[in-house]
Length: 101
Image 1 (cartoon, rainbow, N blue to C red):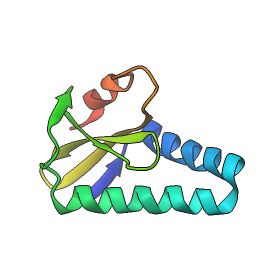
Image 2 (spheres, one colour; image 1 turned 90 degrees about the vertical axis):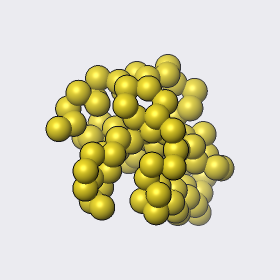
Image 3 (cartoon, rainbow, N blue to C red; image 1 turned 135 degrees about the vertical axis):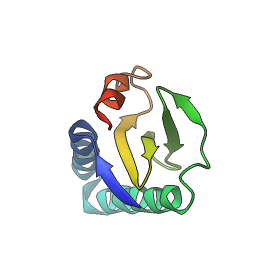
């Protein structure tokens, strides 16, 4: 299954990584990246496992870091619509699901 990022989701992922680099250095940055990668692999292993939470999107919470991955499954693609900070307004990204074909 291919992974497609909404441009804003890619930006959010990069900004989160830069934040952890700034506050915790390269080690914390690597730990965030490793957890994100492991989370994405877990989603790809069984993308329908997590329930739809709203706007046709499923949600996977990272374990250590206060972020979640909001994604939509379409045929052969996993669309990442948000890499969201958990303290942010819920469903701020909902308009992004309209961009998915």
